Picture 1 (spheres, rainbow, N blue to C red):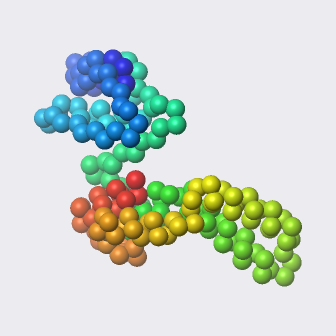
Picture 2 (tube, rainbow, N blue to C red):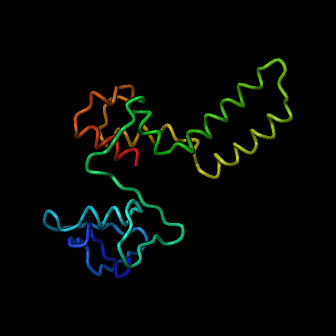
Length: 169
């Protein structure tokens, strides 16, 4: 972030000339009184909001996640489903691998096509280290003391909702 300014309307400047950069893997904290622009700064850093002037961009290859103060969860999914949304591409790869494997049992299966796709999907899973996804999710859910995975997210307290959103992130 270089010389970033943020205005809300013509008269309310929330950020003025902010320049920030971080080393890879850095852990940061943002402190200040209410209304100082902490949340605005973090939303800009996460790419959820634009600066009024100046530059704010991620380094090449960097990723960012933002845990909102009041996170939204998908009410159509249980706790586990919401957590899995954070690793959806990996979950989808594993699900596709299982679908392909089940396809071998079909009486009219095209084994050559199934083997070719299975090889491609398996290579992607290997590269991502996704074979242990279930164990990693279980460990993360336990570490954050999440409610049972099959629990309806509509029944969660505010703190439980935030922990589910943090685990998803």
